[in-house]
Image (cartoon, rainbow, N blue to C red; front, top):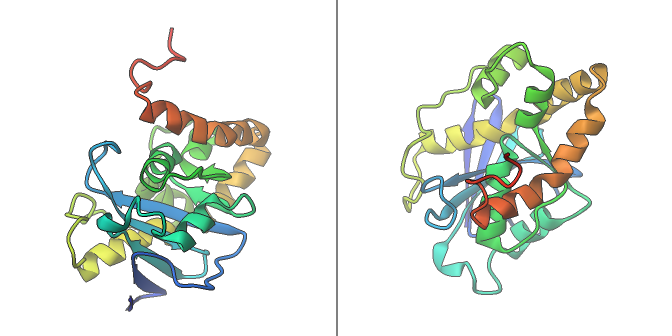
Length: 216
């Protein structure tokens, strides 16, 4: 079942359990997740948001009882694991870990706008998505629904709008940050960081976040 919601300059499609058959989001897709909390082993995955950067967001409401059943969300899993599709994320370390833990797939290749921002915007410590969209794109994002109940059976229009906003602008943001990485001659370094993200997420899931094995 799918539900469509329209908002200014954007369209939101809410899908129950999986992406529809035959949906093509192109070679680069923005991805974000909403969970019950920040611990993947404890807090379940509730929603996966995707966008091709065309003003349309596809939100997949994850059905808990289907996870681990073998036939659960095959279209979503196929897309996220497709090596020919680049996944754009903000703070990909968390989202990759959540998706790998909940869906049992390797999520790659990945580009992370937070890592990119930290590499080239060294004049500031403001690297959150809302701050970046405001300062780089001139777009204000509302964060009012950030801590709402994402496990609810029915999500409010405000929740859907918030969730969609986290992926609708990632393509434009990445384009600006990629240009800065090229300008500052740090694109190769960024690519190396991105390639390591799936392994970094696995280390987190195994408990190597604290202590960090890269620390002294």
